[in-house]
Amino acid sequence: TIRRTTVPQIAARKGGEPIVSLTSYHAHTAAIVDKYADFILVGDSLGMVMHGMESTVGVPLDLMIMHGKAVVRGTQQALIVVDMPFGTYEESPNIAFRNAAKIMKETGCGAVKLEGGKRMAETIRFLTERGIPVMAHIGLTPQSSHVMGGFKTQGRDEDSWQLHEEDAKVVTEAGAFAIVLEGMVEPLAAKITKQVAVPTIGIGASAQCDGQILVLEDMLGLNPWTPKFVKEYGKLGAMIEQAVSDYADEVKTRAFPGEDQVYR
Ligand code: KIV
Ligand code: NA
Image (cartoon, rainbow, N blue to C red; front, side, top):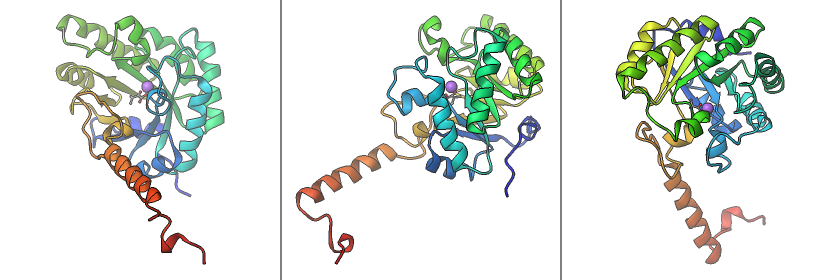
């Protein structure tokens, strides 16, 4: 049996070889990602990517658990981290613990991720002290997009840096084993990465971070639109379209099913 990457192993990668991560929501794609990623995130971006929602705000806990189970089943090596969806952890440490424990028990994942810096510190401490490893997520936090007025790159104004630096420091002190830095200018991500003792995982936060994460479907070219920070390593959308249109043509001309697909 292959043992999965552990939380302490991820934490120990601070300042070392960059940590590789992607999201996955589905058993068979997760099995491919599992060969290359140190950890896999079952992100609440699945609401938009898999279910056509307009934001992550509407994602229910059960949906995270369903996709979390699929990804745990499909993988053997990577640490699996599952996002806590909006409304399941902000209210109190007790509620957060109840929902995080439900996620861990039902999916078999190794850690949870939640959005927020200073405001979530007490909860991060409460969870980690009780056996639930927490990855923090600061900078651009999509679950707060209604307050922020959209998805805005953070740290463009140097006056705001102090708040983000404080968030990173406080979540580290509270016990977070790693911190996702989303959508922030490079010098701020570099500064935070130098200041904290745990790995920073960047998404739209430059190569200065201790690791990188992308949404799998974004980097595969499966989404109709992607932000500037995404590099498309594949053209899956175009490939699917070609395959589907070839199939449609062949059905209409009776070229499919052909000799090879027929029982004699
Ligand atoms: O939900 C998500 O995909 C995320 C990112 C960090 C990739 O939280
Ligand atoms: Na997320």
